[in-house]
Length: 520
Image (cartoon, rainbow, N blue to C red; front, side, top):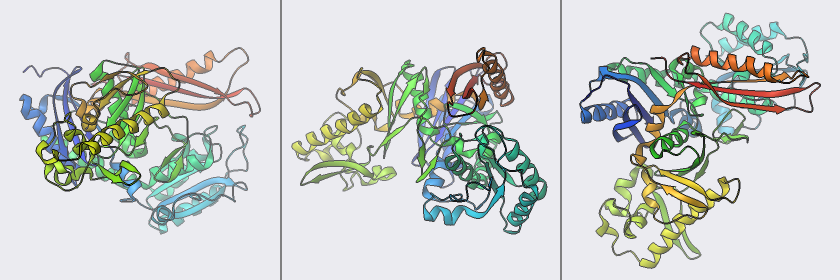
């Protein structure tokens, strides 16, 4: 085949499966699913070899690699591979009553809380200093962190998104004293609210060690395969970041899997505005496409029992998947949220197991071809009909929760569990089930663009806000180019201006998002 132009690998490393696709332009040439291994790089290597062999492409012909992963999300939610963090809060004499990590689950505090330093500093809502920054106390905190063996520090100042000078000066002192410390500044991640923004910074900091080892492992895997092209990581807004950026901000990969599925669903179906349901082995993730990108959540996000306010896609996760357990109880049939997960091929009835799953119901109903249908042929027909009805009711309830009005919406089904759907769904105008739907997440990773955001609280001049917005747009575009975007391809994807009436002047929170093609 002609492999001289734009051959891209899209990879999605999930908790159960690792999906790999080879894409040329917008055409999927090959796609495979592999079981995710304990060392994720093993599953990546197996999947990449399979897709390259299928279409006889040499590793050296690959022009770029885009990878999405749930590795960091799963690590935080499951409380594994987290490192203790030094916490600096610039706030005194304010904010003593709510110390850092005050709302964290006990087991997370025990794992992550290293040493906490409350220090004079921070700002009022109008940018005025609460107190002069206590640089001596920051230096003392740095020495304490060093003595405790801490290698990662999160710095948060009150209202630091309005003025970042305090956090940046604290970072300079910490870096000078601790040398190779990993630093997370809350103003680079979250929004104005102190506790949620501080939580996001600490969460990011506790993943610093895992981010380095995981991404180093991925890079070695590609080198061993003979792939030396640029390598990018999916963010949770549907865009890409470089590996160095991902090492610094692993938290920005949270929910990148559902985001990739939404983006992939758009490409595979040719639909830019729709609802998307990605049905996996354990859950169904429902999101909304707006102009080809996922709708962003305006709510505080709860991750592993901890509230944060950094950007997240608007995703509703339902406990329904191909491996969801079916229970015929006295008060009616239930499906999920418990699931056999990756053990579907050994524990579900159609594969010779003893557990009745949603997949067994779909096969027994005659509309899914998975495993051996004769193994579920004797299931009670009434039970099967109840199960099919329940599956569709669960999805219909989720669709209703995600809609903003009563107008029927088009729906794109993706994911390996999409075989569970065989009937029209209430509130849906049309259902799309595109080719390669089972690997839509990897497809979404392969088509992602370099992206960047600029978000600031700024005063708006009396004559209008156009000049302020133009300056921030220039800053966002420059950030995309620095991150690997191709000059001339970068455009503004979204502009949001939110007035802040309680502040002293005509201040507003302004968010600019820019995206561009890869400079390769």
